[in-house]
Image (cartoon, rainbow, N blue to C red; front, side, top):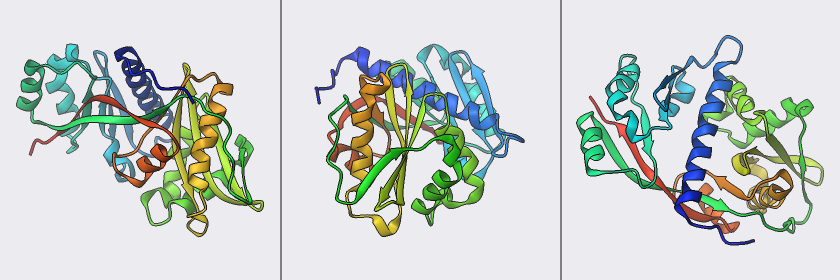
Length: 270
């Protein structure tokens, strides 16, 4: 695996990809029959506001693609959320923060969460799988099986609820999406998604059934996507997760490195 080129251009490319991914998946969920999650998207300048009424996705109320040029529209954006009782978050691109912008955001009632990072890698060689484990691509005909494994893997969380499944499928069936199922001795034990666009692959949702954890399956799912990436036309792979979380540590154990991103902000207005 070659080193990730840590240049401002690469960092900006990753940020643009993540913004587009965030917008496209919300458009896909908004387009579901009956709009079951009550998603509203609205464009403000270069920014896209995603307002979500469903409690299942309430944490995804965001202003995506925010750039300093849109700061004059910030009061209107915030009102778009606040009038329904929602508090959005936004990210300022890497290198775009200035003292003036910092003051404008705080005066608008925003609170800084500090700068972020994302796990990034370049394609790597095929992994050696744990004994008895196999990983295969899953086609759309296996929708029910794939979602069943997903729900069991996230037992005890909101993702387990049947009403969450349409959102997950809307994301994992986007154009360019691939889905994987991990099996132990032929029995489904885990799943993972991989979203590909413009030469970047995104390691999306992945989970392992509780009874199969501790066997290296989660790491194998990560490494499988890193290995398949070049065949899908990717020169970079990006992932998500909160810094210091188990998910983030899994990505780092698989060889992904932290790449800086811009500063995150949340609406702290009362």
